Image (cartoon, rainbow over all chains, first blue to last red; front, side, top):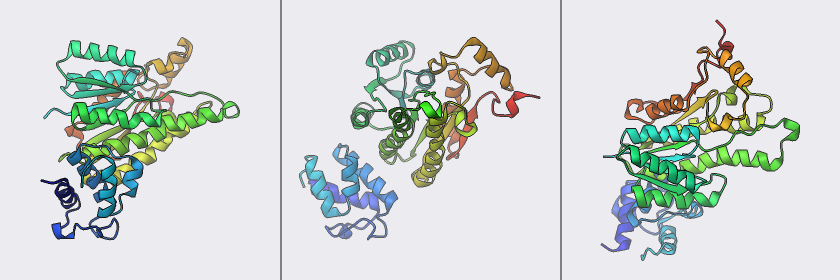
Amino acid sequence: MSQLEQLKNAFVTALGVEEYEVKDELAYSEHVKWDSTAHMVLIAELESEFEIMLDTDDIIDMSSFAKAKEILAKYEVRI
Amino acid sequence: MTKRVLIAGATGGIGQACAHLYASQGYSLMLTGRDQVKLDSLQQNLTDTYSVQVETAILDVNQIDDFKPAFMQVQKRLSGLDVLVNCAGSLYESSLMTSKIEDIQQQLQQHLTSSILLAQFASRFMARNKTGGSLVFISSVVAMQGSPGQSVYACAKSGLLGLTKSLAKELGSQQIRINLVEPGFIETPLVKHYSQEKRAQIASQTCLKRLGKAQDVAELIGFLTSDAASYITGQSFAVDGGLTLSNGSS
């Protein structure tokens, strides 16, 4: 499985959204299922899946799927 | 599965009592503190006594940069976390007029900001668990009763009540529970400077006519973080021998 697929799966698992909904435009607070609680679950899922620990600033900045790809690249996740 | 606990301030009186309690119950432990020598000594003591995994990491709660590396050790050594107990902190005593700004800020960092940061990191681990997790913060009876010369300490400790209740509401849906323990006068190194006369005076003010031990506090913490307390969250519990009940008079 590619790391992009891993990332998409993490979003599906954490947010409880359909796979087709996971695209760059998917954004925090704009999708009904991506609320503050889901955001914490998403962070936990990403950290577990990629064995990383995100900085608080990156957790705050992770406001969309596109942004998540950009941030994870800093942690050597190859999307 | 073996449960995993992080004890912040593990080498203090209550921290050590908690470490022994959790080790005796078969938990895997991550002990954190400022002094590696003391951590190593406690680790050795525990591994000599119990057949459990005991890890250590430096985490000075006054140093914001210490938090992430300590939790990376949690990930690396324990692969997750079920329980966090924050025992770190010092008792600052100074009158209002003589309280220095750097000491005030340090007390707020040490008791309040540190607890927020610990909860931020720990909750990310606990959210991965099907059964969530449990956090306990340590306050003081002084937080609700007040004490002359301890206004800064009381202020920092009382803030933990709002944190506990808010986090209980915010994290409850993930089955993460948060509770607060308020020790009274417990015989630990934190109060070793108190005279025998002062100790006797405080003991006489309790209903039980004696001072508390760190083990008394650890037992409550152990219960609150156990499955037996799985429906308890956002609460505050005093362990004070009745000190806060009408000065112990009958």
